[in-house]
Amino acid sequence: MTSDVQGGPGWVIRGEDLRPSITDPAMFRRSHAEDELVDVLELLWSGRPAEALQHLSSFPETVRVRALTADCHRDLGRHDRALDSYDALVAETMGTPREAMMRQHRGKTLLAAGHPERAVEDFRRAAQLRAGGDPAPLASTQQALEVAEAAVMRRQQG
Image: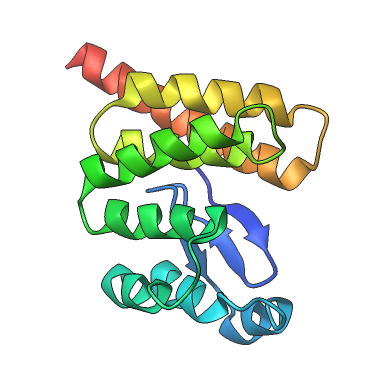
């Protein structure tokens, strides 16, 4: 099984399903004190995507809000809806610093939807885009690529 990766203060990205998980709620809250979406993150990352989605409806449809909305749909099993959103977000962010993040999140959605080969493509591209940058996002991309490649191997053996 793939190891968890430190995501930031008070949270990790779980190796078992590539989803964020809050490990220290107080530290997480302190580190996100200025983030207007902290309640949404806490709900989503605590396994309550329906409640997170409800909270998101009160925010303007920024790229970040749209991505979090897609994550909620992914976690609710609405993979087609989440993929449609991420396809649009990847297209919109192509060539910008956000492209790697959108590709990684689309890859997670593809993996959840049972398309590990396509997920590998997005994770590889995200890794290329993140090479030489901040090591934390690159580590999460490498983690995601490892999980997706293992899923492809299981499918081929199976």
